[in-house]
Length: 197
Image 1 (spheres, rainbow, N blue to C red):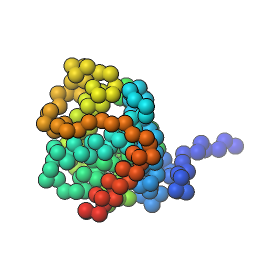
Image 2 (spheres, rainbow, N blue to C red):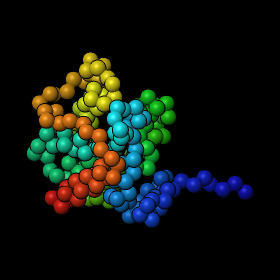
Image 3 (cartoon, helix red, strand yellow):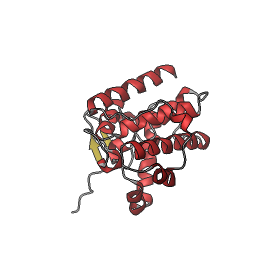
Image 4 (cartoon, rainbow, N blue to C red):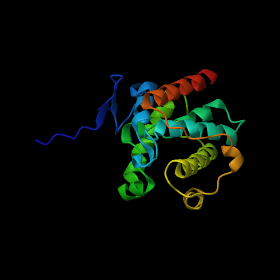
């Protein structure tokens, strides 16, 4: 008799997250922060002594989103911070790999995102206008990452991510940090945002 393949992951918190049917009660911010602090963006192909993590990227996207939409309710800043949260379980795949994997990756990402949003008091699906603003912040972050730590020229980064508004990036700089520091910063920022909602 064939057994079903395991489709859940045990988290350090002790939670057991079912990837096919994730429930909000099995999601903890400490697990998300820990996982994202160890997931490398750009498949680890970045300069520096530490990988540039999805947690660092998420903190940058949330800050850029705040500059793009300064009057947005705090809950949407939280959505920006959590925009890549499913990657604490499924990892960060570069766009070419996502294309090769096909629609199954997107469906899994959507299920996890919905459960994460509900867990932290957000609607399961973020409104399209907010999603577009978060995506814009995400592309600006990607442009910065590409040019500052991933070896892209500005022209090449602009080709892939669009020309960013330089004013939005003013004063922002990518500084690679050890995972433990990033994990703490992510958890702390999450707590600040939850406290303001």
